[in-house]
Length: 413
Length: 143
Image (cartoon, rainbow over all chains, first blue to last red; front, top):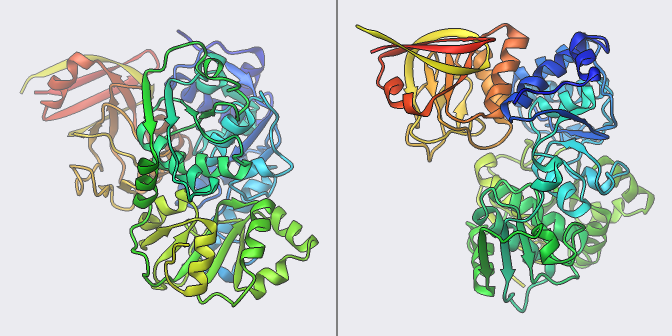
């Protein structure tokens, strides 16, 4: 069961293509052995989740790569960093942390990565094609690429995503291989709350499959075909937060699931789950630990990063009196440019919106300490914010969030 | 005191010895281990408050976020990491964290796969010595 190295892999290891990629390949070989892969494959792109500053070791790693003359060998995008380099004045944390965070972001750019700083690289010009072999980090990006686009990546993380980028190689295992992409769990939506939009439905379904499916790939039946790309993005982000979902199929909607039989690869599912309207309402309720009517400190939107289509939904909701509660919207710097081109930035700011680029409210020190509870339309933000920020959270639809910001307290429409 | 030797599979090279810490449940290093002290901080973990520093950490399987690799590397850099890690299942997060500490700082935290049938005997030892070489690993237990 030895690892079969190609001529090119041996050249990488031997330093023929530079000391940086040799270092990366040494780590990759160990990683491949640990996951029991038998060979490496070429990748056409990478998304690196190494810009968030967790401590000195991550900075030392990137700077060591630079010292060794390393450079990425495939187009590589970057996930969010610890600071908003476009609006540095928004950062309220320790100076040292901001300095090291910015250094880590710049070190990755120096290695040849594109300064996208977004957790939604699939909504940029770097969106991969169907069937592309890629090495991506960031759980929501991974699940979107696999499920909605049909590109192929495992859940790469710390250091290894960058090693794949520096070598253009990834171990041939897991979701890179067709035989491992079939659904093993069947999730049937038998009824949905009548008053819900697709956005809320997506988050509740995502949160539930994350908690219920373990390591099994789910095939979801009974979701309306009208699920937008942003709905599927919310579904995946919620599923990859409450669980370790890296791929889901929505039968009749996602590219590897034209019908149930294809989604399951002709096999019988090991797990069958029926979800009713009441199950879904309960799932949405568990995402809130804040009572209706409770005062709010901040409304946070855009986890994962807000798309232009989501801004287009937000804009008309902001017509009316200025909200009492600050609204933060996280987006990529590319989306920020697009907002400016469309002259949408000024009306957003006039309505009390703080635009955050390059980072995200729940991983950076952007909100005033002690400001109070958060409301969000994101299953992911609702899941992580209590632990990361030590705050209470209310989850609601986009319209609920805006209405609540206007009222200064949690309101359900 | 008698010593007994067990075979194992090397995942990360190195030699280390120390007292054992056997985890009763898998631990996610990210969000579960404080790299500044080596203390388990996961509020739902039964061994919350225990310190991994200098121990031969017996963890059958890994768990959790891939950001665990950076947490392990950072704990090792600060001298608060385990002396070695014994597992029953291969875990990429653990291997990468230990490899990065070895490559960047020359700090060895050998990682090896033990045999399932040896686990209880290993856990009963007062201390263990792990020699993880390129051809295989040996664990000697002071019983």
